Length: 174
Image (tube, rainbow, N blue to C red):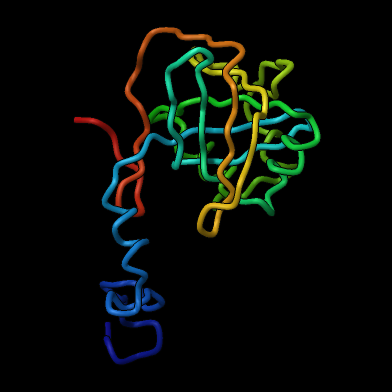
């Protein structure tokens, strides 16, 4: 094969990647924080993959997350005043990508897989751990919206390995 022929050379790097010198230093820092990948859903239904989430223990417990204020999830959660948060596992990579808008979803992201309907929003039928939350407050935070939810229901099943997002890729705990 002639490497100089059209289509004869395959790039070893991403030809569309932003050079390191032009990348946001804050974004590069965020990429070095490993984060659990979660699925946030609301009645409607609507959903969004979120890797910027924290659970705060207390009375009441809370879930905080950075979400896209232009997402269908935010429109549905703000209208309903409630939402569900499900931590995802290694087998949920395509599910995470579907709700992040990175994987094709003919018929919408809820068209594939089985779902358990809850008053807080749909939860993947295979999920054994999830939280149902009441929307408490929001505020702008950087280029996102900080959503604060009061935990009203918790389901915790057997603990499996989490799906982790680190430096722009999914990974698993070793």
